[in-house]
Length: 339
Image 1 (spheres, rainbow, N blue to C red):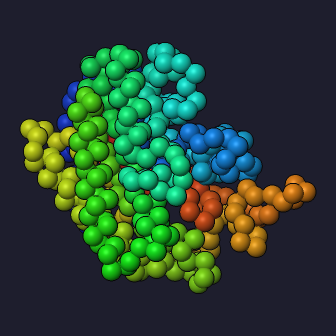
Image 2: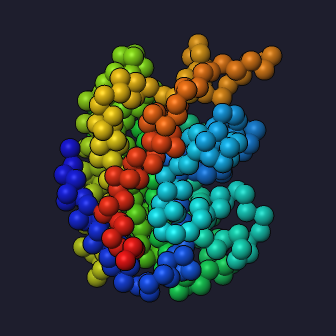
């Protein structure tokens, strides 16, 4: 497992260099957040008619109705925006026009189900998401000064692996595929920097072996150590690439955000909860959360106390789960922006 103390120090000094660019009380006025990723970061980019994220009971905790988020409430993007003192940036697909009002907090390009490469869904992958930002920058929506004071959040890769395995990829060749994923991810974050964004935060891979989808067969009792080991391997290689990138520039530009340890810690703090890994919204007869039959009858059940559940459905954290992850990460960031 990655050492948490070292990670906290690395993230601390990364944000120190950024904080020095901001005067006291000026975070909300200057900071833009650009988001690239999958369903862990998506706040409403998928089509309403094609995604359960727009169906009840998604959004039941926040904002009280489906909002396109794969959660009963907020996702990771929302908590990072809150930390920066801004509203969650508008989803790219929901922008009606490119004006300073709709884009003043940045833009969220994340699309659920996507990855570094093409996945099982026909939505924009990471390179296409960056293309969208390139087009917006070319239209002079943001000044170079605004971009220089902005942050990019990159959160994806899990769908690349699930797609690889679903297409009968060899477990023996998985490490080589992982190198390809991280290699292309690295090229993409370098491209983001060339667009003028000077600070880029990349999340590690969450513990795949703790996802309810992967442990349903053992009644959600324990995480799968083998799958978690793979997540750790991915994260080690990703961190090495990020360190190499930072060695190539005069000041640190790229930062690794330790989502893995944040998840593990959140699980461990619920050690007395026997259902800590069980999703709150569970589909019946193999169906998913939010599914209904032809007669309108719901094919899922929702737990009584959502605050006790780390996971909302078989893949995605709940509002409480993301809050716990954010709370673990916050101490390494709060001292940067809070005097």
